[in-house]
Length: 454
Ligand SMILES: Cc1cc2nc3c(=O)[nH]c(=O)nc-3n(C[C@H](O)[C@H](O)[C@H](O)COP(=O)(O)OP(=O)(O)OC[C@H]3O[C@@H](n4cnc5c(N)ncnc54)[C@H](O)[C@@H]3O)c2cc1C
Image (cartoon, rainbow, N blue to C red; front, side):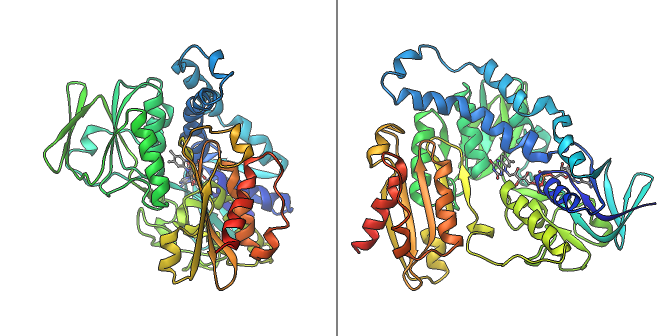
């Protein structure tokens, strides 16, 4: 039996941050990881997907800049893109992640962990005991919708979609949420004929309709066949092709099928405690599980919000709580209101409420909207590309409660909105945060002017 202050299970972004933070504070910490330190995000999710998207995005931007455009005479190089993706995911080798753990005195234990009793974790033959707490950060895996023949067709999940060594000639992607839409764009720009199938009447259901419309248009321009309101009746793989029969009887045939239709929690570690397979481990605002006061669940596993940065934030909340300190919680940019970016072209960056969620929450709101590139700074970026910046203001409190910015390369635009929301900066005060000229951040001036004129 080995004893630590804290045992962290799962070395994805959330678990890594929790282990490193607590280790850095001088606690004795063990981190148990069954695959690769860095988790889904580093190897099969955030990082490889962005590596697949970025070259085409850069080319599209260059194409919008006369002078630079003429210098690019070739087309996107698929081999180099895939090679760069492999560099980004370190060829599925996690050795570069280990020095940080060592620097923070974290003991790494390789293997599958199971919690078999109060503060007791088994990893193969080893038994680990935690004096203070066990943090579970075991993430999620792709969920397969119960469609006739789908499992037998051996569909690609995010793992194969992000690490493939060859771009298929054609692919059907099931689900037009963030992952499906990003993968549709990546595969289309890498030369595949893509069909994107979505049962709802639009893509990106959780975001503003205008954002979904702009991304839909751009995907269609790139040749993606988007089928909306499309239920799938059955899937069949035969002689090297997959046939997908839609509810109306249409059949889409492609070389490959990928599924991006939600996630299920990785619960093997907590099932001995009575947790249900595949279901989130529910937590309070300090990430303490609702059932055991010594058990914390952070990251995707608790189902609060499936984003790396929020998992890392939850790791900080849990670590503070274990160290006997507490954060000032809750605030207005967490859970479904968390900052988020969809890395399509145009990108969609959002934080806080959409119009619908604000109205559903009963807020009295003002909505102001400007063109993302409708200022001097916009002369140099995203020329001719669609782009809208929408800000939602709570009329009662006179603070920003939501923002969505679409356009070329706008992912970094959302952070000032996040600060405004979390710090609840009064609208009158925002005037004194002066954006530089000529930057696209001047969209703030236009938004504030538009709000003042109401
Ligand atoms: C294609 C795709 C793209 C994405 N892009 C983004 C993005 O751009 N930005 C963003 O913020 N989010 C993105 N996400 C979401 C992001 O990947 C997750 O939110 C993030 O990985 C969650 O981190 P985590 O630490 O909770 O879990 P994970 O990253 O899933 O890590 C969990 C770790 O726990 C380990 N583990 C599981 N069970 C056990 C066990 N019993 N014993 C030991 N170890 C165990 C696993 O091996 C894994 O390493 C994307 C997701 C997908 C699918």
